[in-house]
Image 1 (spheres, one colour):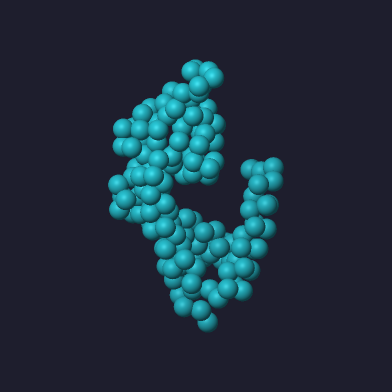
Image 2 (cartoon, helix red, strand yellow; image 1 turned 135 degrees about the horizontal axis):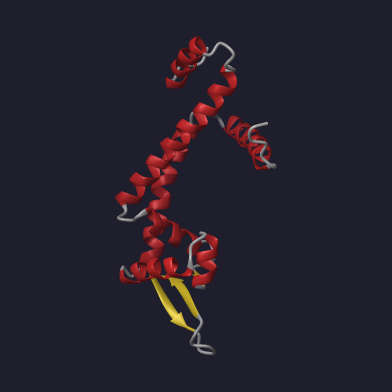
Length: 168
């Protein structure tokens, strides 16, 4: 039998209260929830270690994912922000030297945001710190098991992304 975790106790306790509870479904869903919270705490710790706020990291991440250059409206759409909220974020990141804005030579109303060296370093350092914890916990599985986990989670996510039937 596999080593017990905190969710085993949770499932046992709730089975006594709700005899019709499916322990497999409850265990799977609760473990996913616990892992998401754990990874969220790890991410926040990584960001704090590198002096970044979550919203700063998200903006730098979106910019890096676009080759380090994008318009403010592209970034706002990517992270589902209003243009004014994006302007405020970019102001702060520009003050920190993480991004620079350049007006278009052809149309000064158009601006391009560029990730600077210090911005890329801050983003990448936080990303690597967060990634170490992700790799650490997934080392509990051998490579074939990790591939199986990816495939199983994909199947579950495909179902979750279908039209939800809440209350059915």
